Image (cartoon, rainbow, N blue to C red; front, side):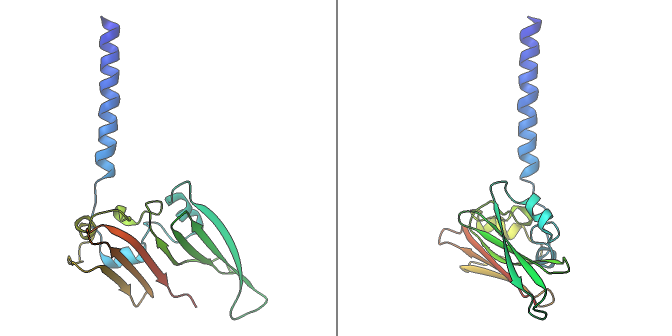
Amino acid sequence: MKRSLFIIFLLAAVAACKTTNDVVANKIIPTSVKAFLDQPFGVDESIIALQSRFDKSVKIRKMIRKNKFDAQKVDTIIRFYSRKSEVFVYKTYFKREMLLGGVIKDSKFPLVNGVTPGMKRSDFFKSFKDLSSSQKDSVELYSKELMRKFTFTFDSKGILKRISFASYVD
């Protein structure tokens, strides 16, 4: 009798913990558009920080590029990619890392507040404090100071299908 009560108690505790984790993971705290454009992935733009934020199945490829101003120096472009999506980070010869651009079509590259393709339009607008709701096919967020532009494309059913973004790097 004691053994069966212990097993039931243990199973109830495990089930309660699982439910709690799901509730915490789905909690969204709205952010401002400026804060989003500042850190779209919620971490700094370093390769290590982004790698820890992305899904474990995301692959990495390094490409070498000669520096535009000094042909003796070599910069690196890091490509994070999966089947449908890719994100590029530019790394200068003096080790500065900057988000360059990319296209996201799946949930392997989550943005701040869980903004990922597949989410509903209403949930997307709930993720921002200062973004008014719209029924347009695409929503653009742009920062002249950061020289960064994000375009969110929705399908006819109001589901986010594609996120494309670019940053200007001189």
